[in-house]
Length: 472
Image (cartoon, rainbow, N blue to C red; front, side, top):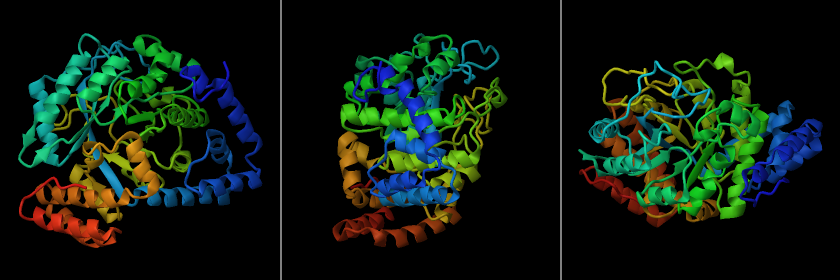
């Protein structure tokens, strides 16, 4: 089987021989500065670079070239996403799972982790707690268990989440991170009004994948890897991909995830809406010492920068797996979405004291949402709770065309500022509110379109009297 980005077969669009050849090419050309700078010149056009070119940049350890890579990543991030950082929170519905994944404490052999599944009434309590923090966007998570967590349970939970209106709170976008499923089921998720369908590949190396998933339906590499094609066939416009860095060699994974993005673009006309970059971290019976491919911080930062250069139009997500210090470093290099005030345990939001006994992974950044929002603003970022594009039908290729044309700044920036204003009025501590109001006053003047800017300023004034949910 040869490499073919338009193929619908996993082992052809993620082709092992192609990846190994790319890595060998990168090793041979790591000091070929003429080629490196040729790739960087191409990257300056902000239209992306290939997986093979990205492999060369990753392998190159020339200090000047590495500095140029980071500088370019910062420029591209600013060009397409500005200083906006979208906020979200994960919501764990159930940790029942039939898979045997060796890196996840939800694996079915783990007999001492408390197994929990939220009832719809418990989901309501979780959502109200999240709304009381100020969240508008959730990513629901669940283990794979056809008996305990059937699709009907997921669909009912989505309906419950959208139905809850508490004080001024409302969840306006529900993203879904559940196991690979059928085209028919993806259509049902689409009809339920989900935002992005998210599925991490974990590793693109088929041999390693099968060893890391020895039992359960997730063992099927092809079915898992081809899931995004079925999701798009089922009508889902926005899909989010990711690998768990540290399971396999990071060079292999970087090439693999970019090949996946190229495949989606080649077949469906639009690449992934988001790419997530989690790293292996401790959890319950999982010891990171068992994984020899851990990615050091400096390499992790370089990976983020190269992904941003390679796929300029794709959002990038970093979770609370990473520390405040690490998150701060990679924000400027390409990250456009972060979680805040997160709990990775089932039912973790409604209880006053953090209980991580049912958590999927340890949280490094344990700050509250308000602390994260304040921190972002002090760094010069605009925390955004915006869900306008999803609600206006600007998804998939419609979203990408706006982004590529540069016109999205006239939607995203005012929407970010207006949703930040909502947060400040309804949820923020006084010091956070003061910093935020000063930021909004400065940033609203930078909206380029006169009509949009004036209308946004009008909306912001109306919000002082209690009106909410304005959007472009």
